[in-house]
Image (cartoon, rainbow, N blue to C red; front, side, top):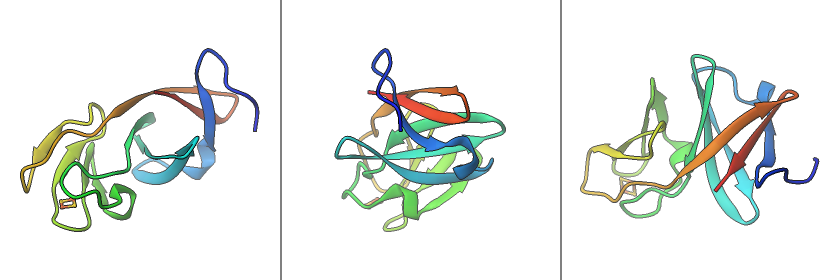
Length: 106
Ligand code: FES
């Protein structure tokens, strides 16, 4: 993969994240969930704000990702906690798509 440009780092090929799905990506050593919803890509921390379960192993329903452990829900557009056990929001990353690659920036 190519180097970071303007702070954006390539993490996945577009084809690896079909619409309505999500994938785990690594930004340096940080786990990041990348999702595509209706042609737009989003990236948030993969670590649940409740007790740190991997959100990429949960379910994506529209813009809402549900944690596999206790089912907290977060909006992938913002990282905001939506429902479920009381939880902190998860970090959101900026996303850019270029040359069939998904780039993210902290
Ligand atoms: S660890 Fe995600 S809801 Fe508890």
